Image (cartoon, rainbow, N blue to C red; front, top):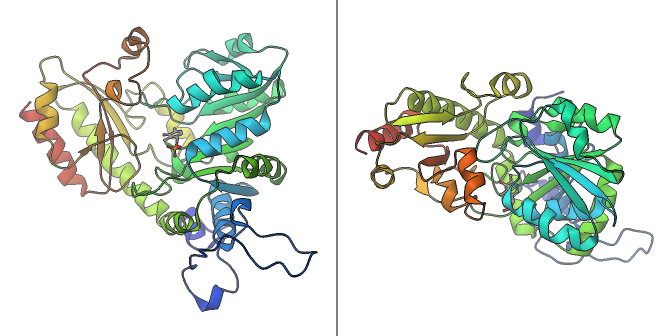
Length: 380
Ligand SMILES: *Cc1c(COP(=O)(O)O)cnc(C)c1O
């Protein structure tokens, strides 16, 4: 089978090409002629326009799944999948540190449909996970790399656990991207992405992905049609274009992130670096075994005598903004962004303080970026 780089470019493309166009054009139309009643109705919200179908083929190929569905955002993918897979009375289990929107979905929205959940601490041993189960547990939900501590859970143990207890496994693979990890190859049933991040890669659109078996995708696709969170054809075009460069972008981001993590690790103005590629990271050997690369996200804690404001003021390349996976490096203090609404005691216990910084490494030249960050530290 061709590698991911080749598949990203050639898989899912229509054959023959539309009017010979090398790049799939944008079909900016809401509806399609329907003269033969035996044919499928094509309609923009049904996700079956040429732009949607080409993306589905390409995304399934990248995720190593039978099928895929593109959605209007990562949350549209997550909510459609969960509202489809869970019935009233069902219960799900998940590690505690989840994306904020997902936490709110599980805490606020799903209980209104009588769907409960139990979270277990990220680092609990797999042998203790069964304590979270109830008689109605049907789904195990996880994230392949957590935010912002960049933990890599024991994904293989999760698949085994789910098999033993007859659970459907769902994983948010946003931070790793299919270039670094394909959870379906480990046995996960449903793989979710915020396409807004690495898949789009340019911080210029919102999208989401659900990938899995044809049967599950048919079921989730039906719910998604009813919820109506479809991606517009123009955004489909932009995402489609971005996917062709996924491999080369992520490889470079992995490389620069690793170089930055090494430089920070050696810097006196830094108390601690969290990067799965460093041997000091608690999940380093697991990340090495499971992933093609350690990712483009680096978190670190500024030393107690480093001036936080002076550090941020000294940066000229990374932009102070939430989100991740784009060509511009983005830097945040999670205490003010993703973890602003988390209980301060819980945050403190995780080490997420005013001094804790997260950077999404972009595609600036490696040396330029490392130089920019280290000289801001020097002056802080
Ligand atoms: C951003 C993000 C989401 C939500 O995606 P949107 O495209 O903003 O809806 C979900 N999971 C993770 C891990 C994310 O980083």
